[in-house]
Image (cartoon, rainbow, N blue to C red; front, side, top):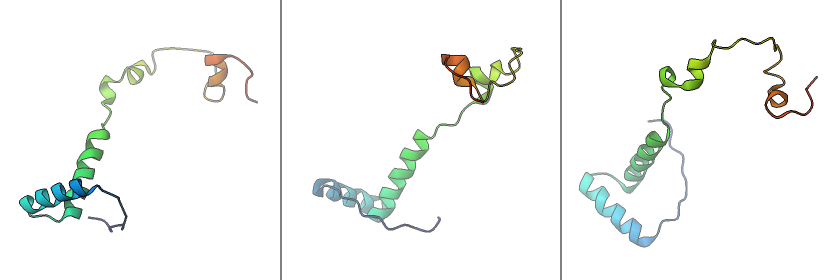
Length: 85
């Protein structure tokens, strides 16, 4: 594991009591249990993109246009208004 960073977190007493029980059952410290829970949460939230099934990836190269400044003026082409430079 990388270098640990000390952080202060306020946790209700009832939750601390439950965390202590769970940590003891698993043979962990409360800190280890909390880090494990955070890691599980973050891994669930960081979903990887399946680029093979991404509709925008599939659209790449399917269209032709004479527009050569779309990356600079995409707001103009999408919403109107003034072009940049």
